Image 1 (cartoon, helix red, strand yellow):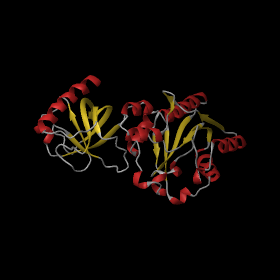
Image 2 (image 1 turned 180 degrees about the vertical axis):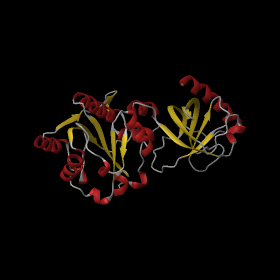
Image 3 (image 1 turned 120 degrees about the horizontal axis):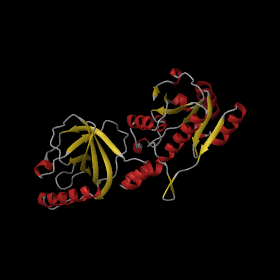
Image 4 (image 1 turned 60 degrees about the horizontal axis):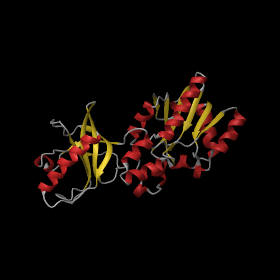
Length: 307
């Protein structure tokens, strides 16, 4: 996948099939759009182009900025788009000046003039331009005048529920990780650098890797204990993770840590990815460290059973 950090760097390609959006999560609904694009590109011997924005428009516009969190970091989103088989990714720098572009200017100046698509594919609920006034109907009308086919991809469903980034974010906050993974079409993960903790887990017989996340906008799943897989240096390990405040031993800040099974390497300052498979229980305050250790033993058995 070729990546362009400015639309001016992109040179129109043969028989372009394009889409545009923020694509937080790159979930099943987004994947349906990309699959349609690839199918149409194959039919006309063309190439697929995704147009997205950075920073996220809601950050620039200050909309609910205190609570603003995203399913994917920018890096992970790019990785997911590449895994989806997209040929070209244009990342448009989003600023307040850009936010004032009308929907028709957006279509004509950004999509039609710069990308010159033969086909445009968008999601069923997609809106664009200033105040999100642009719609499929508007795009379709312009497409008819310009000889461009516009395809609207229908909503995707899991257990009769429409898939959307908003619903996935709510499910994450509720700790419903299995439902999240079903909506995403892959398993939710957190990547971070391993930092030193208090070594209490080691004293209990369950040493943990504590991670620090660089992206302040990364959405963290609900507090609790999870069955996990851990990716380190291209290898995968089983484990159990905890997101929380460690009430038995600490009442400090939120921590993200994982006990990696059958693993004894020192990996401080190195990057790992914790992949969340299922949420096993709430975080509890135990009467003693002995009680906590016994519960961790039960958690490990449960995690191994799930994994």
